Image (cartoon, rainbow, N blue to C red; front, top):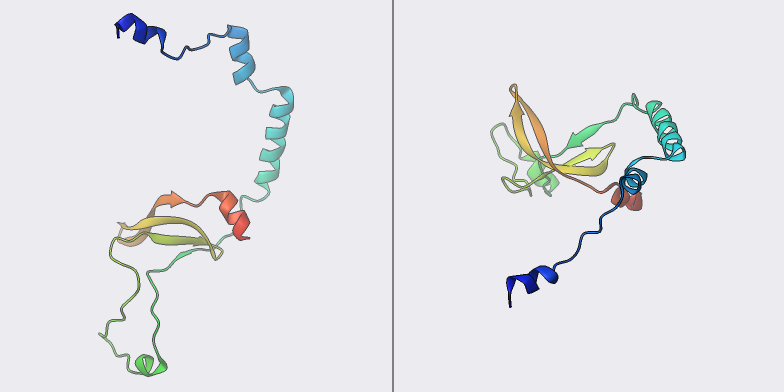
Amino acid sequence: MAIDDELDNRPRVKEISEEEGRAITEKTDEEKSALLQITKELYQYLDIPLTVSTELGRSKTTIREILKLNVGMVVELDKLVGEPMEIFINGMLTARGEVVVVNERFGIRVTDVIDPMDLIRQG
């Protein structure tokens, strides 16, 4: 196959006029108004306090084992080293991340955010 034949078989990019391009990228007055309204409504919620939490892991045990706990004993958890931590906001799984240390305090670097639509479906 000749190079010219290959070039003729390529998908073509449709050229549009500058006016058509502006119509695609510019927001209409209605869209701008709706965005402004949403932004105003959002401001009333920005200072609502939320509880952000994570857990290192879980373990099932018996009362007998709990009564045997002493200083220095180790409780084995179900999470593996390096496994992503789950981040909960007001008790709802919202994201996952990895443990980091920031100024001698633990933190979590977010590596995955749960799709908001999945959160709504979980309801």
